[in-house]
Length: 90
Image 1 (cartoon, rainbow, N blue to C red):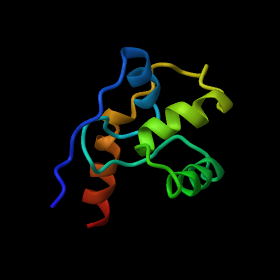
Image 2 (cartoon, one colour; image 1 turned 90 degrees about the vertical axis):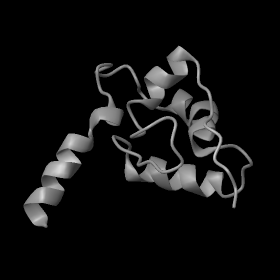
Image 3 (tube, helix red, strand yellow; image 1 turned 45 degrees about the vertical axis):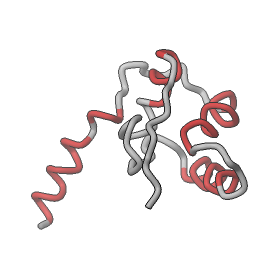
Image 4 (spheres, rainbow, N blue to C red; image 1 turned 30 degrees about the horizontal axis):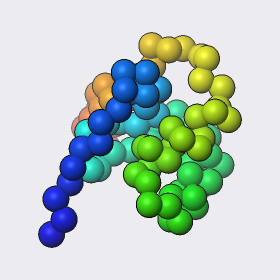
């Protein structure tokens, strides 16, 4: 079994990642607030890269996105909506 080692990010990298990833230090996470075409391209590129998905996103995709929007978006705290949906449906 492979042991997961959390990747370290600078403060500015973490600020960007929080808008699009539900957590920054766990092996399982979700992508949010990204167009489907960006997700598809990211995963296509990830399948041929040795980088982590988050690092690949920072290195190769952030420059092409308009990230000047609402900088208060923090996907890492977006679990409340998912939990509410889960409670409502199940």
